[in-house]
Image 1: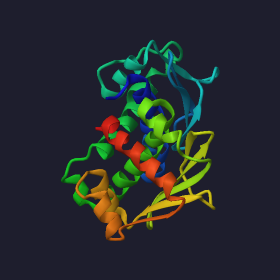
Image 2: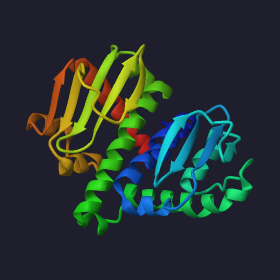
Image 3: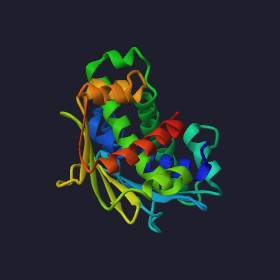
Image 4: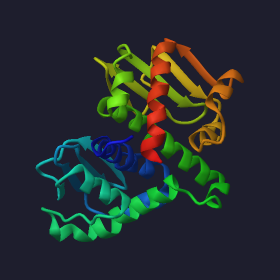
Length: 253
């Protein structure tokens, strides 16, 4: 039902890419990078995605492609190996940057452990309002990025993407995060902000509703009927996005 290559793209851009947002939202994440010299980690997956994350001044940014000047390089011989690193069953071996292994083992692992805490939260932690909000925002960003990767890589997802016309689709949580799905020639990219003038939009009533939807505690069709999910513009775009969203749940399970 899922394939390793699509999962690798989700893990790269939807999971590791969410470290950007973690550092923006959580002071403990920023503290892990405090007083550290700028450093970059390049990830290169054979027949899969490649990206570079640069850590600087308590924040981080991901860019597409493994930069030649990255401080640490982590090569993976297959998408399966890379996915194994994400789920903790594979230990990566750097091909470059052994002198900076301390950053990899302490700061980077500390960040990914903190991200895991938010993405797979303990029910007790979710009782804390701030934790609940950060966790839900991070899930929102991961889901919107995963949606684009499935639309671009997964066979079933691509079928739905092939029926989406060019233009921007705004997804948002009222009073919370926003993301733009930009479609061009049936290829989707996620921009983690409102780019303005969308052709279609879908907004969740609030952060609690979004959480209930993400956790499968409420029915999305019922929420639409009750006006808790607002849709507008070219509804055919939203219909196909919703079909891809069904695939997101399978990959992120």
